Length: 86
Image (cartoon, rainbow, N blue to C red):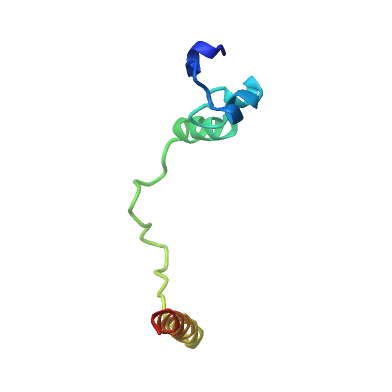
């Protein structure tokens, strides 16, 4: 890369960096591109968003630990805001 890419009035910190740092990065890393290519070559078994008829439906329940965690976070935020405002 040349200085014409960045113009003549470069920032001192930027001019101190090696050129390998200033190179353009790929949109995706090579590992990600390989995985995307592998996924595109595979044929989908089921359409996305549809669940197999044999798969049991998992129910989500709110547990007591979920309630405790929510109340802890809610009270902590309330205390922080009230301490900030007073």
